[in-house]
Image (tube, rainbow, N blue to C red; front, side):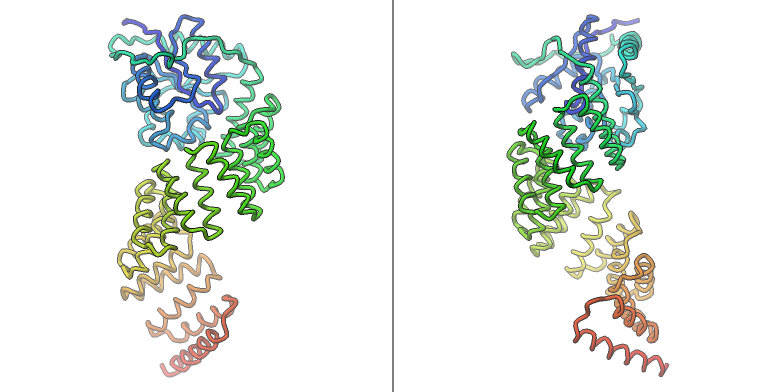
Length: 475
């Protein structure tokens, strides 16, 4: 058996794993392991010169996988993601750690372990129990089984350290209450991801029972209450979180969402602005403020905010789509098409809205073949939206495919029997196809469900109905 290296790097997200990671760090140090456990959020310089160098220099890489730890890993620059990628590239001995109650199969974990992070699922994870005896047993298993690996063949490059940057082994004061609170918080995130908001509220409340000053739990409970329809409770939680942690950005963001929900858009903009003041690198705050500005028809302000959001998070699919919508509203159709294309490139399998919107932009430019291609792509991804079939029918009419257009209009009406524009559009296709009686009946249906209809439009359509009935009688 080769040399067993006792150097370890511990990777974790501070929001819900700091206490558990610290406890694991203390156990390993007490058993003679040289662990790197960073307690400060790394700056870009520290990341390049210290964090990545220590991952390469250490044989073992422990990654604490919690729902909150993975929420931002879709961003290429996210530091947890970069730590995992570095460990994979340099073939460290990777050991995923999970709090009891969370597993690879948990939706909040599985949905993030894709692409470059998918290999993590091939490693055997170690579950960390809540009770002391279970924790001690898990740590003994970690040391004897997972870290007792021969790493003689592993190449360790020299460590590049700057004075004072490395966190030396130290004693961290922990309480059982803090660990229980962290576990309850992560279970709350798990429920949030599954849209089980009542369960999420209960878990966040449990975390707050053990740690009443847990700002992240208060903020998340506020958002869960908002998503569950309890706006008063949401505002109360966000106010409490801001009072405890005024330098935290998420409570301002969540309160802004609640303000927007009750129509107080200026208040929402103020909250999103404050979140940006607290954390200028939060793309979600810029995204939310853009939504609020767009609602106030402040198009140029919304465009600036969406631009900042995608600059901070180039993979921000929804921000690309929405920036395209703003550019289209500003009559920049070419720019809108570029943004929709970026959204599709970021998430091609989930790009029905981006394909649809790009199709409408192409249609406005009279590029109907391209519009038809995009509407078809949108239908292939999601065939449940009546408006997509209606617009594809219009594109097919423009290129002369009346039969296919009729099929699309009929499908649009099947999906939404009160879809007034589809009836009017189908009447045009039926008339061109020589089915005058059915065309007249579609216009009659349109006049019943499309309200209000301006008097001059109604008069013109009634004259058209009469004409179609006359033509039907003559055929």
